[in-house]
Length: 87
Image 1 (tube, rainbow, N blue to C red):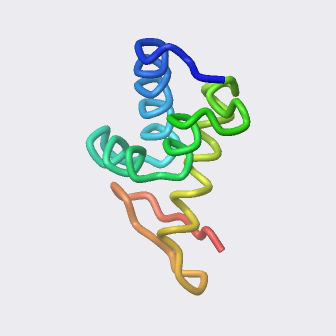
Image 2: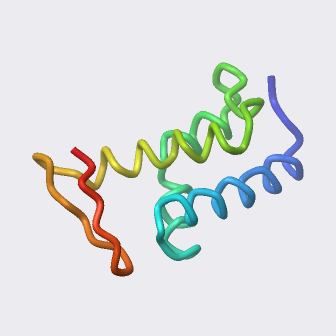
């Protein structure tokens, strides 16, 4: 099923804001990561009606993808004074 492009754009923006807050990163970083993510690709292409999931579910899924891409061998990342042990 394909969603309205306008509704998808609004959903994207809500997810990006939630993700930026969860990951403690700037909106610009969140936007950049979102448009290169598997979450975006699945929503854009209507795979498994992924775009029908709640904003919070999708932002959490995006955060998990972010962690997976930014962690190597249990590394600790630093963003804006907060340390995360994401291993």
